[in-house]
Length: 94
Image 1 (cartoon, helix red, strand yellow):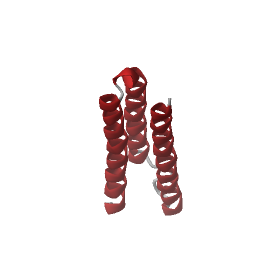
Image 2: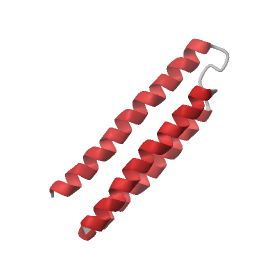
Image 3: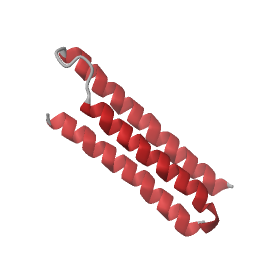
Image 4: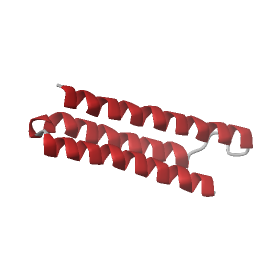
């Protein structure tokens, strides 16, 4: 159970970092507010999706399937957050 708790904390932490970077972007580049708000909305939706997936493991009776399920969530989380940071980075270059 502790691993699930850590996963949820990681989800919150990483998405909070994306949101903080978006708010910093808005502060530094007020003309990019609309694009940053789109990223914020997408990040919140992504966070909700990750929590929903973590609360509903596949194959509840099979330990291997559950482990694989959470590993997939972790990989998707890292890829998704990386994409958000790339979008934020692209906004600062324009």
